[in-house]
Length: 479
Image (cartoon, rainbow, N blue to C red; front, side, top):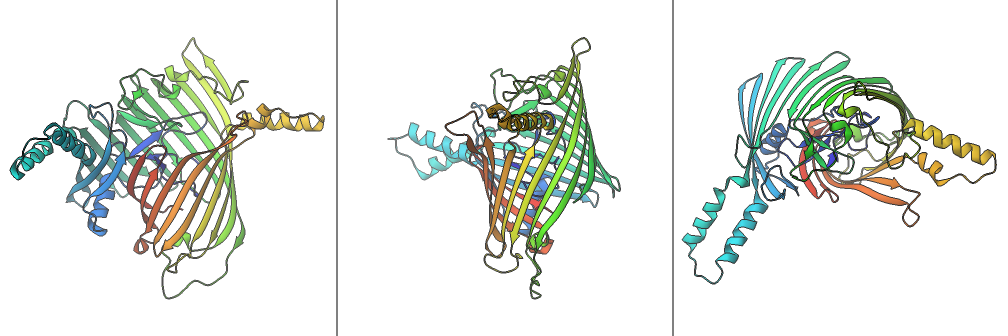
């Protein structure tokens, strides 16, 4: 699992996850208070378009992926190594239809091994072996098919319709989605309906919501200045874990109901140093957005307000919020509704050496980000620590814990030519855990191949040890 924009200079709201667990290749973050909002998008192509690009321009007839789970596999949710292939039919300049197929290689090999073990000791001919392989290739549980139709309704309007089915069964386990996007001069409008909608919580668990609908109006991201989002979200049906028959308590925001979120933020950037060494005139940078050495800091402050109507209006105190200062919250049981509000903040540092033009080691980039998703909790903790210090008292661990940020760091290093290695990791701080107060969490390793001809695009192969997921995808205009 991996954030689409990683921890670079992406907009604070962009928290979608890439995942090979489904054909679509994406999961929305479970809405929380105040973040994530639950809808905002990073810049990306649909999965069929990505696979088609690899086929046509990168000589990759089959695209690999790995996920420990698959939807409705019928064997307890096990997944494995798979290969993808797409067939694209451009009916017109404004209408594109794609058929994405996926073959579960690991399950196929496992079934072959079982057959060998069962027939061990008996004589077998080449013909019988081929017959056994052909029999297993007909097993529908090895395949998944995804139908996608994309319409360019106007220069500013697009419509995407997708229908995915697993085990080649069009009735038992389909996943369908419709996404409409309209580009205003300074805003983006996105309307989405998914049945079921796939969500991922902060622990990396996947949840299916039978019907999820959302509308998102967002100002265009800018390097500095104000931005805002308005999100209307509706869930219907009882959520359940992906490929699990056990009844577990879902995140409250996924319960049936309607929610309206309004978010505003202000961002500012400052260069501490920017290199003046002239670039090579004989060759272009591998990525124009990574062609300037610099050291820069940025900061974001904002607030989010949420009004919820239905079962999703109930909120529980978090484990680290024993005093109930996670934000301002009101609940009205008589009308089954609630209101939540909180502030947020972010500080980040980016340092880059090299112009990413030379063949070897011309790019070293480090990024660190400190997130304060609960402003009221931070303010309460900072006030308590300041008062204790002024009164010559020892501040409590609870107060220090409230001012500890969520930390994300990434390091990117060019290997050779357009190839670079990147690692991203979260750092969790728990002062109550005396034996191990600092832990490394959600580490992701990646190899990136910069597509120089497209100015700022890359093919990325990443692996998440925690999720045990591997995926190859295409990304544009990311840093």
